[in-house]
Length: 91
Image (cartoon, rainbow, N blue to C red; front, top):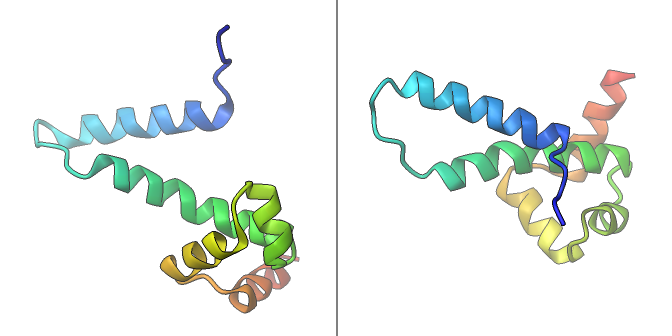
């Protein structure tokens, strides 16, 4: 059974292709961590905005424990209050 590639995977592949071209022969390092950070922070921001900063709802949407979500929000310097202000400004 094959899994169909979605639009997020396509974007990640394209970004990595550009990244490797721009390396111009330099050695890549810590690529796994870099990609996770680049994807995880906007994911958390968007889910928190969609959940109106409700961490219980956001954790359910993400399929992770609320404590794990809180740790990740702290790791990226994101807070519920900060996210609410961003969502309000965009309206």
